[in-house]
Length: 136
Image (cartoon, helix red, strand yellow):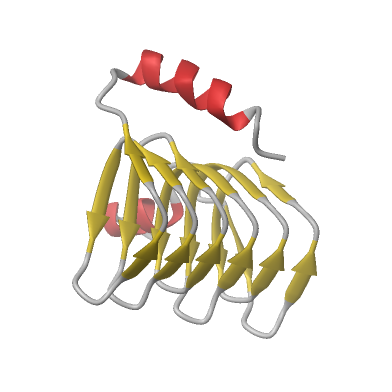
């Protein structure tokens, strides 16, 4: 199979990602070193060192800590993203957001406060780690 640029972008450089299918419910925290797609439901926190995608039928009642994120479904909790957060038109977010870059499509719902940092990546990482210590 030929590896295309589009395939690399979808799966990340490592080619490894996790998927929680629609109809699956996890009660507890999830920690992953790779990208994560959520189409089911998590009642707990997610710590992801890659990108997390909350699909249109996905939901999380808990906090998200990740490098990047794209939300199409429901999130109730604090979201802390090191780089970029995208709220698609079907997104419903209830909670505070701490990010560097935020993209919001028309139709997305966001209720909470947003703290954006224009810091360089090293300073952002320090602030991110300090803020993350309060999230359990």
